[in-house]
Amino acid sequence: EMNEIFQITLKSLDIAIKSFENNKNNNDINEEIEDKIDTLEKKFRNNNIARLNAKQCYANAGVMFFDLLSNLERIGDHAENLADLTLQKINKSLEYSKDAMEELDSIYSSTLEALDIAIESYENRNVNKAKSIVDVEAKIDKKQKSFRERHIRRLYDGRCNAYTGAIFLDILSNLERIGDHSTNIAESVIENN
Image: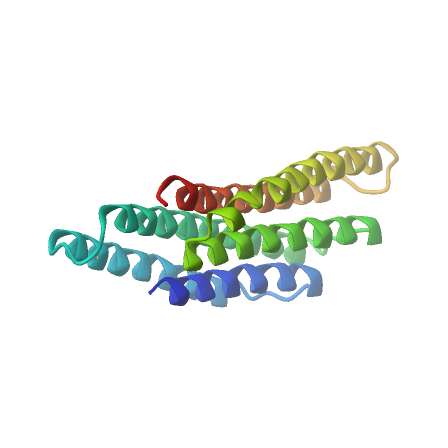
């Protein structure tokens, strides 16, 4: 169950980011994927409740699974936000500097690293792996702050406009929040093992 929703969530996130990079409207695909994530989340939540009621799993495992589902569903919501921001970029024919695109790629890579750590630590119940997310989360937070400041400088220097700036900052924020949800998953592994 976990692997299925993880793969779908990751696909949604990847489509959203690639669409932004390539100016391609894949919003309909992302909406379908988000609907599927929501459906699976409800189904798996009900299955988990049934397992807990039948005492087919330990309470700690059930709690971890609930945490995982909630956080993956929220990551899916952020991917949907990213798809909506992409649509705004396309509809307004907005352009971003090479620096801005490199910054988005950099924070996205760190966000994926955090998500990989969270899922791997969950799959293997690896507390040490889960603890390693602290450094990655700090890196994401540092990048968000730095890239925000750089973008404000670009705005001040007239190299971008307020509308492109708002979208850029929203993307940074959504990616940082995905990092937060990844950290939540890893923390659940630490707390429940």
